[in-house]
Picture 1: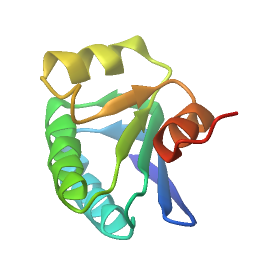
Picture 2: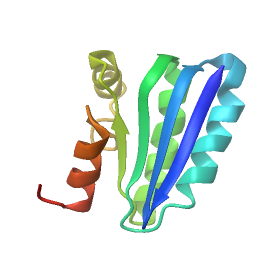
Picture 3: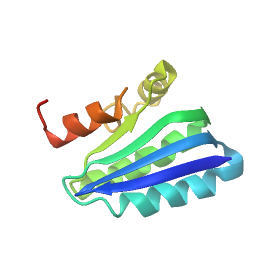
Picture 4: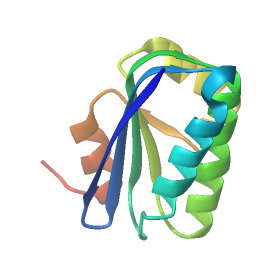
Length: 118
């Protein structure tokens, strides 16, 4: 089961997800990403916090990469938030590190992507 909360803060859009993303709910995951990514306004950011996911399948990373590319073309910065080292390893292994920045805390993602110095 996939759970999500969304928040808009100025030009930033934050999506916090929990549960699992696998073959049974890929369409729901794709709709969530697409619908929320299009609401982010340049410079963004569009932040996807996957810290509460128990499982994220490889195809879910591909969908994230696709939305990150679309956001990049619109000038919106994208970041993943995860406390799990396997998320960073998966992003790197899939060759997505240049496209998907990974931070361990939501506050860090927001300050890095908005240029705030705290």
